[in-house]
Amino acid sequence: MPDVSQLGWYGAAAVCGYLLGAIPFGLVLTRAAGIDIRKVGSGNIGATNVLRTGRKELAFATLVLDSLKAGLAALVFTLLAGRETGFVAGASAFFGHCYPVWLGFRGGKGVATYAGLLVFASWKGLLVAAPVWLGVAAISRISSLAALTAAVLVPPGAWLLGESRFITAGLALLSLLVFWTHRSNFARLLRGQEPRFGHRGSSS
Image (cartoon, rainbow, N blue to C red; front, side, top):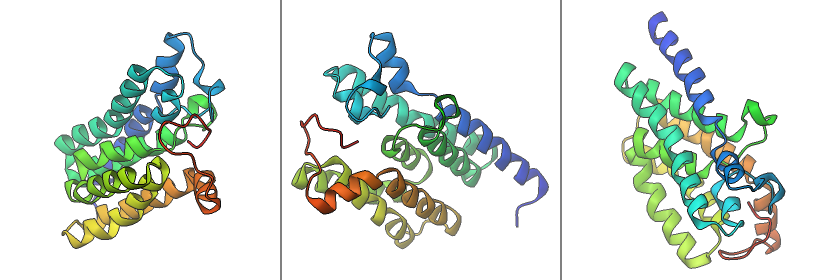
């Protein structure tokens, strides 16, 4: 059981991670370009919807910055107080991205932020997520299907590769949240109506 000082670090990591994750980079970047991303496509602030503006450079910047939110939070708190604390910070950034207080708790779907967390806080999870996402995306050309498949396989895959119980449990919770934020996508997948890459529908 963690001591009082460790609980204090967990609390600091959670607050700082959430506030960093809640920065809506997709909205900030598109607003600077004279576009309100909330009025484009699905209205989502993530990179997939930013791509629907036709501004690939903005979508790429959003992808990188959304990934770094969790990644940097995890890295800083790992250096300050250990790997588990870093994971708490990165996971909180993921939650902040999905439910930012500044936007009435309506944010992105968390895939890029989850990826950034894996890069800096669970390389074993990344070893599972990267090939699964790339493989499913290449075959199906459906971003949400790739994300959901990776989300299912990351926790057990990381566990089999020797990931700690604490982080494996955290990955499982985050994967459940990915399914929740993608619930409309999941419904369309079941109906065979989810758009593929290059389509300007409202899937994400």
